[in-house]
Length: 183
Image (tube, helix red, strand yellow):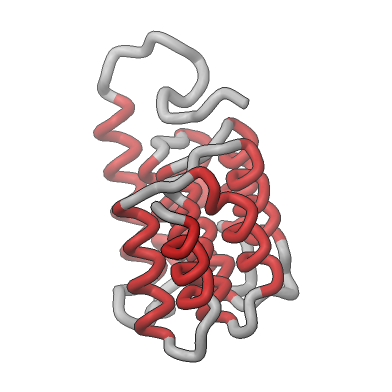
């Protein structure tokens, strides 16, 4: 990606139009430029609107660096941040995470926001975190709140448990998550 294209992408990510912000995030996913690490982290922290910060979190899943993963973890943990941003950060951690990310996602299952619980359930299913099963069972039994554009937290918890159980049948080589990035 050229310097001019990087500037334009960052500008679109932090622009006034939500559709353009997420289109810019998709462009980052299609052309992962390591030089976007610092601007994306800055946007995640200080983007103008929640959808700008959410688009930055969405784009960060492709940049598998120590700094981006830590920034995503902080966003999930930040209770003063908009739930949509925190949910996007949790979803991004499903694709790019480290061992500590599992603990952040587990804590998110008890969050007051249905969006955070939903996306933490999704992420824990993707990373096949067996420790999540008792918490997911509780969500499956009790949390019937619907996440806009998707389904209930309970259904996502059920889906996550199925993924964990399916992935759990594979032979084990390591104690740690086979999907974690070692940093």
